[in-house]
Length: 243
Image (cartoon, rainbow, N blue to C red; front, side):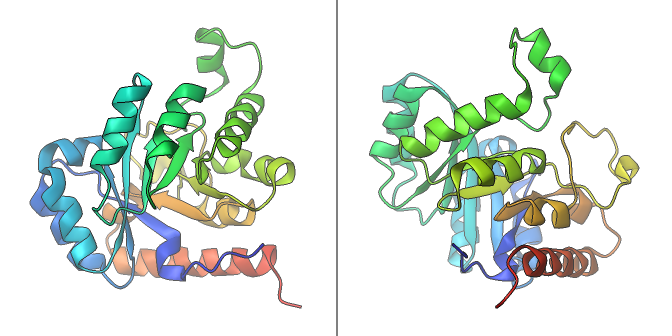
């Protein structure tokens, strides 16, 4: 199943800023070239609803990445707070009761289940007491989330291909941890461990890529976006050839 996603929505720009005004300026700077923006915990606590309203009032989409993880009733009430805000995606963590609580009141909001954070690697798995590998855990969590009514998952590009092979096309994969080329040194103090290029992520089956610092630290953000979008278009053509 091919999804009709405009090219300027394939990149979700991560507004990872502590100043709401700076975030709004980036929305205005990129508006048109990018039509999808992520508001995470840092910015949400700094700017609350006015930042989200600013994004959607300009005709853009927003992913509220707060990774809700709490008792089911609290998660349910939190999801309800997002209703009628024209928010497109919201993220959650959790087991069956938490997922069920989130999807019960989504009311048009698309719920994405976080599988394993891209800042985790195999050594973190061992330290936390998991005996399997990351691929297995991502698949287990994704299968459960989709079965319980989530619209998609958040996973690294390294697991995207396996998820498509096992679970098909009828759900969304949103992939963070996107880095330019093979050189990660352009990102200072990088906390991501399971990374890939935008082209590799899309070619592996991701629908969207979340990108922040490779754009925000670029000398020419619009040129960087154009290059990334060209890579994404090439990946889509390789993945879903016409005819």
